[in-house]
Length: 283
Image 1 (cartoon, rainbow, N blue to C red):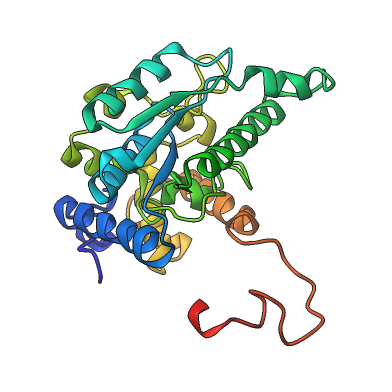
Image 2 (image 1 turned 60 degrees about the vertical axis):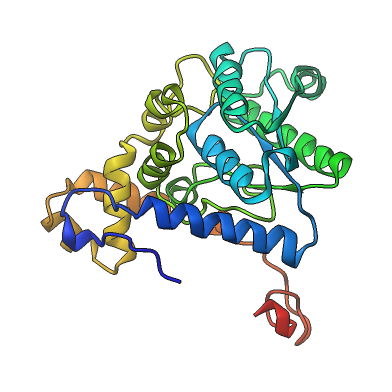
């Protein structure tokens, strides 16, 4: 099934759109198929950050599985913005899903106290991977499946922690640009504070995604849509984008290709898993 996404030729400098109603129904069906039918695990665990991506994922899981089968885990660090907890609570209230709060400060500090030279990037990666340890353990506790919340823009730009944000085995929004996630959030009824606030990994005070990336999500999405449709950098620039913007996006996509794949295996046989050999069900 192909979703009715607006191609870049339809609106030169606009990020791609989508039919929110069709997309919501399709993704709910996808979740039911992957969890209930294929894996026989009718429950989901989500790391609920207070951001729009995890909120949309929670709304989709509640729609697909029923709110009683969705477990939201809030995982604050001691320096996290308190509004992240209250914003996540708005999602829990709106969907009726279950919720637990697990503070990761002690776990993170237990390691970082031996690493006094760790900069913000290293500390952020430790937090992200600690949260994934918690999420997978909670999935075992509830006999549920961890659900990913990374969007297509973050994945293409490499703006995520490898073996953390991308670790869950199922991701319903991984093929949606950030601008499409916002559109879907409005359709699903995600609380406005989550849609309107500046996206942030919440690792440092006043940190925002777009400041880190050096470009707005809207511009990045429009450029990515052009590049994915096969437009060259030069042709993309001719459509009205700045040369520096296109080069920035291209550089990030090219330099983070490795993050979008499983670890590379040295092939010694014709049955190397995922490198050569796939069971028929894996195709």
